[in-house]
Length: 316
Ligand SMILES: *[C@@H]1O[C@H](CO)[C@@H](O)[C@H](O)[C@H]1NC(C)=O
Ligand SMILES: *[C@@H]1O[C@H](CO)[C@@H](O)[C@H](O)[C@H]1NC(C)=O
Ligand SMILES: CC(=O)N[C@H]1CO[C@H](CO)[C@@H](O)[C@@H]1O
Image (cartoon, rainbow, N blue to C red):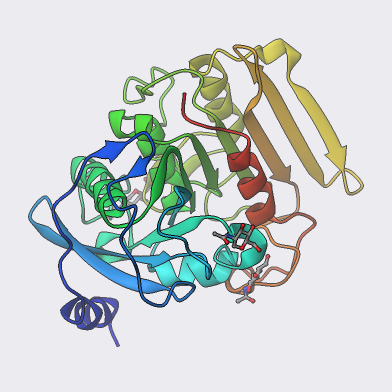
């Protein structure tokens, strides 16, 4: 079955969401509303820029309607949907999100804006992020100071696009993995205007990535920056002391973890490079994206590293 057919069947079975509602400091407008079947991933729709859009949402099994929860939004890779990202990363398991709301939006045509093959414009997809957050705040109990974004491949690239635009100001921290940074690929980086500085960001990338090359160049959807160059731009944007960055090598020199101190915030910029890893979601247990890339498990778990990173940051 075609992805679009599958999604329209799902969409037909779900009601369109109510209008966005304001947020209070104690918790969002959705606090106090009850939900059936917490712990089971649900499908929801909304209208954004005149298009029907949709997403999957996973509440903790013991969801309390009066507890403001952190929210993690996970953006899937190309030719994919949110459910695949959920399964591949394992992020809805209690191990990672017993106390978090997990959200997995679906891109138009199975992708996100930024590539030359994307169906939605950057403006449209950024508006969708804003509408999505309004929808979630209005229906669920959200801690507005603890909203985070992660994503893989073009989803990771789109996480960076969010971080580079106004709507990024609604998030506490960002964690792209194996990202294709099509919208942030030139030294003048005039297209990247983060809402504040520092904007905490952590990236995970394989040194042996055959799709989104560590050294940059022509990607599937356009020109990509080299990862070290792109990290240098973020070190500048975040006001990090680039000369004092710390690099820790582990697993016989296969894994390199770089940490910057940015304007007094230790670790507000971080990078994990796995030399022999290809284009997949880093995991110590084998998952689908590793199988698809002809890879096996690796030394580190991106899901664990990213959730621990998010836990350190609250939106000021
Ligand atoms: C739900 O379960 C988690 C994990 O066991 C626990 O940390 C949390 O306090 C529980 N939440 C509520 C509202 O009972
Ligand atoms: C997209 O960009 C890539 C890399 O520059 C190029 O190889 C490809 O032909 C382009 N595709 C389209 C549809 O423009
Ligand atoms: C499909 C599959 O087995 N995915 C696994 C990928 O790895 C994570 C843990 O890192 C598991 O939770 C997933 O189930």
